Length: 111
Image 1 (cartoon, rainbow, N blue to C red):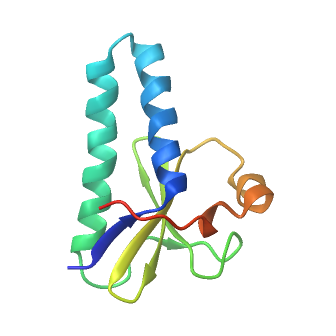
Image 2 (image 1 turned 135 degrees about the horizontal axis):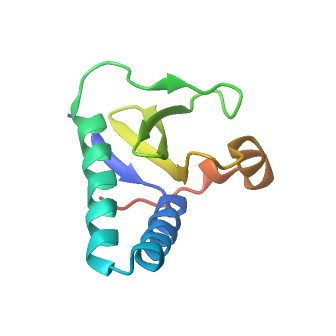
């Protein structure tokens, strides 16, 4: 199994997702449950052998993505790790987001 690493950008994304869902649903428990589902999906990606997800060379040469219930998990393989780069709502303009801040290069690990 690859080691799962969340970049600092993902921690910010998860806080934004939690806040949005809590406001929309009126339930912090619902929001926490959905964030837990996203984190479980990331663990699942790290645990599977091979190369998963869709290549996203238009965003960055080593970036890949997989959808999960209206959100997109962006990740990359690096040695024995799976680095989760961002988790964004599926309707967002990801091209401009990745160009604007080179979001995928903010390296800070959380296990």
